[in-house]
Image (cartoon, rainbow, N blue to C red):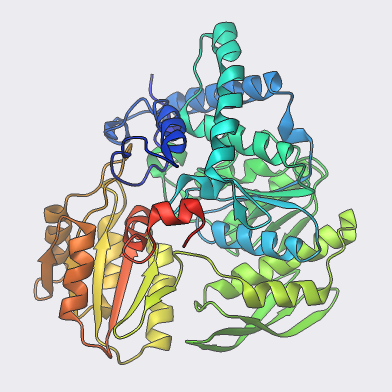
Length: 482
């Protein structure tokens, strides 16, 4: 039987044959990938009822809990900040991690999906787990897994295994706090097996509709499932109907709910190529002229949530966070794959805007910062995404489009020819160049773009991860040489 969490975020080509010094790493990663039961991604086109999905979700939670029980429940050995949402959750996760790290505490940060290399998901104190330690961790996991399978006859699936690895690694490193991003949904996500100290839900959009439901309300109910009894929760969502769902869940759990626009707010003072300058107001204080070096007006709300989270952690759990920690952390914060500049002349920006909500925010930022620059767009998406809705947001700023597709294991990419057809369906007159290889697409874009123009690579996160290889070699990243 298939399951939603089988087909997670393996992003690129067949792994190379094991070789020194990374042979063991690739062997371990290949073993984890063997837990993906539907490598072609046909699962995403197999219709299921919500009742059938619910049965799958309950099984995945039960499997995860059973394995972690055999592993000694590592997820209960440190306090956790748990984060769900449609857009912004990765940025909020890393912002909070950066602020906590400024206190001198040891901090584990888990983001999902990974962008370029798998061990990004296992980071402590801003450092990915070294490949050699990853091999040892997977070997430890496999020893427990043998007992687990003998006991249950119900193998873990890929995403469940990763959730267990994350919690095991953070316990092994004895982190003081962990900041954990959900993979999909919230209530039944494999990461939702922790007695988290703080829940954060960013905004809600229509995404993963076959799995989470076809309405914002249904999706919101999944996200609200990370709220824990008598533990605070923060949200940046401002749609009253959605907020009401969070209010009901918080009330049921006797949890204090902090809402953007009511309990804290922000104002953008400046937004340009050097970043953002914002004011953030909370009941405790006014943070004037906070600076984020990474551009993107959408990051203002993310920063406001992170600041409010820092205050809650300080007030409720005595985490020694100061205003200076907040200021220095946000000023230094960067999120790879989000408004990330890779080169100049021509300037190349990568941004993983893979749903209409994210694309609208990206386009608004590009318009504000680069109002007159001709833009060559390189784009590709997964086949089950709302491609037309994303393109309707993106195409108005494009002078030409390079249509391409990422190589994805476990999820179906939209074929390049289909992407080109979708583009012409929306804008018949725009120039479209088809490149089935991402690397060829990048080289084509660079050859077509003048030195004072802009190349924007956007769409699937898998496309962004693969594109980064043009500038950052994956093996050098693994070895710490990049």
